[in-house]
Length: 591
Image (tube, rainbow, N blue to C red; front, side, top):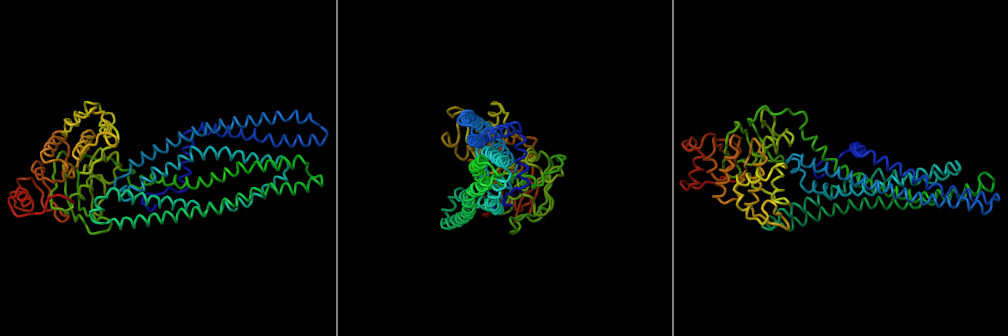
């Protein structure tokens, strides 16, 4: 697991994912390899032909040797240029298509993550992976991948050509490259851990910035500015140290590499010259081998630079692929479909992050099609119970099941078909009103969209917008107020058409008249479906089939509104207090 909470893929998983991406566009990858190989072969002709010219002139061939072979060298150079350009074009197209698959896969996995996993990890980690890490992977696929293929093939062919010119000179050149192998091994042992630490540090910074921005009013209200500044500085200092560590690795790696390029060329010229004096090799062979090794520095330098980039992008790819591990470890495999829609809460206990218990032995059965209101004072555990019912969290002890299947173990797609939790938190997405509604049901027609808006009382103000359903919302467009945004969220619920709907003060931002109208409209639309309402206003409880009263993490009363009022217990006290008929009691809102 990363420090941010989301897993990081192991190297074997990263390699397996990379192979899968290559197989997904295998023909293009094969074309890139073939074109790069042809370009490398064309590039090998120049030094070899120059060696032939030197030996031909020394043997008395004269100018005719130059006139005969020089045009071939030029032709091969032009061929190499055209083939390399074509290879890069095909490689870049391959990289862009592969990047699109990576992005689509990341979005699919992110949307499939359970809410509890995202909440524990923090949105900063997920945001950093979806932006910075995906961008690094994309740059590698678009630029580094094709460049690595081109130069890698060229480097292999150049070394093979040196051995073909003269095996002894080839061995000398290979021996001169030994320092590169040593420093590369030293670097690779440390690079992955260093870049993973750097990525985790960046995620921490993103998380702190996101949390501070989201809670800016709270920070200001409680005078937490210095505390947040201190936390930000500590995170930035950690990031600085992590980046300085990877910088240190590069400052060791690259100078050794740059120095090592000259060693094989110098060795071949010195030892090859001595061997030529003794007649062991021809002068053309020495010149050709030296030119090949000099030519090797270009592609080899590019390969090593791309290897360094691959360490960074490999760490980013591991973080991106880590979402696959998060979805696999969420416990959704081999879970049967629920046998019905009855919800059973049995002996449930729950504590946040090892703190004091918020729920203490709650037992509750919600029948299909029932309208249940959950009421109680602040801190009674109502919101926590709603999260467990919606599968956002799993109970510390006991079970919460739907159709005899644990709710928290259902995969997100099946869970959303069974249970949808709507809170007073809302979000307006960039795009038109139609786009915002079709998030819940992409195939919905305009008639269905208007019906959903009418159901929640939002059709009037939407019709008054300049372009109706096509009106752009969010930045640069129309900015709905809090109640309008909440109505859009409720309209999405109507379109999603779940069997069980949990409303956790979902109409709290609406004025009382609009809220009551919206709740009644929703009740009519969702007739026959299970509705569990965390009641902020007690008229919701009055309209429910049954009322559950929460106190201090326990379910203390359960029955109809009339029965509980007649019983004269906690619910009756809340009801009379709400109507101003008795002593003051805590407001029934909150967690």
